[in-house]
View (cartoon, rainbow, N blue to C red):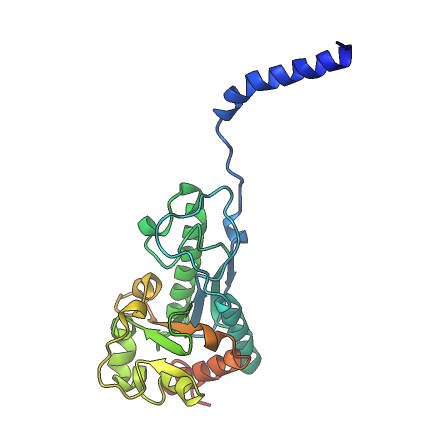
Length: 272
């Protein structure tokens, strides 16, 4: 047997002996900066816009969650960003914007911490997201004692042509209801009323007497945590846009227009 062949065989035997030992060594987590996996743009309007479910970035070597929904709300992050830009172009001021860039497969930012993730590797991303939202809410309260609004942007595919409102049956908009009554949530000048006037099917229907909402989309962790039922909260509305609605090229302008009318007519913004 030639010397080169013998050397190759010796290397193979050594590798075979070492592999079991190597396989027991811990695999280091790939580091990530929490600031790199969220988009946080401070603003001065009495409006906070959040989008927790449109990210696609991994979080180091975080394993995929085994419980809970992992579906991406495609287009909602872009919608939130574009609405913020439209409002800035029209008003000269921006809403505070927080968008999760990390994938829902690893973290669900619209859940309590105990349910949002299954690996501590992902914890800094979750906490950075909510620290940004809390910062936006605190600043909006301080700058706008007359009231401020958080809109949490989501997407759903079960009823593709319907937009669902979620406020825990008005709980998370307690301050708004105290000022203006139920019409502020479901009358013609409400946020869903303005979107219905622009051709969108909405639930609850405009003019409905009851504040009851579809239990699937009645308002998640974000609106409940930062809503105006809390002394340090602001009015908070979850919007679940149907998949068909999210494909409309007019959606960004329609949402920006609806928000502008709603904010002005309900005292968040001064009337021109």
